[in-house]
Image 1: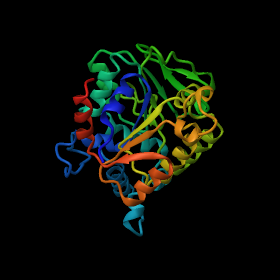
Image 2: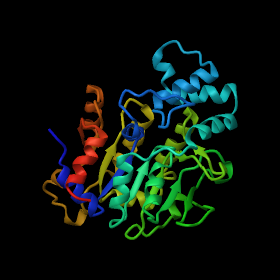
Image 3: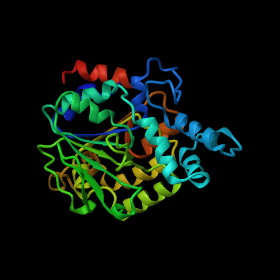
Image 4: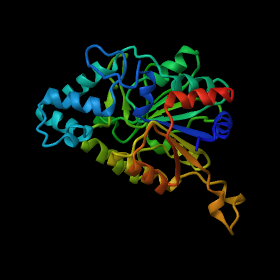
Length: 316
């Protein structure tokens, strides 16, 4: 069955959907699905598997099987142990500090943001969403989860539109006018292409453990965002559930998986009042389909560019 394009497009344009962007969305910018990433020559971003293989090669990672080589958190942890955290940041900065072309999904969301303020959540380190908004001259606030500076580790970094330096804000004290402001929330950090000063990457096993610990303690994701999530549909784009860390994140988000306002819900059948959420993933495995279903998220096997094309057909 195809996704309910009309409903998703209409709800998105009403500001009732929170898009979550995973690494898979960047495949939409590749010249061909079969194109392989090369650290020196490619003009598109690596997948998590490709990045893991690159770091494994650079650090001579002692893998016993291919699954270990493609475990980015484990490989990154080994890279830090054999080199340094600073060296890992430098490697990642070199990879992500390039003028990659935004994919159609980034451009589409920016176009929606012209008329409807969006809260866009991404676990990607690149700045393609920001580029898409910049090209349209659209203002947005940027919120980043930091990992690499102890002095701000219990906070989020908040770049108000047009401001060069971020404010350091405890997650539960952040307040943005979401009704009038586009917000890009980078849950797992970002590349800082201007200075590298604020480069931050949730990428090693320790990083994920720290982030998930803070998330469980409700000190990672800003409280305002969590409240916003409760009355919005989720649209997961380009996510696979093979990684344990994403499964744990989703488990914690499950506590705020959208429901309608309790005051308007029927006490006789609350299950019908639960807002639907969707996942768009190209060729998910049977296991991933089961995992999404267990989280009450309807998954659709659709290429990301085809999805955007069908959404555009419904009008931006």
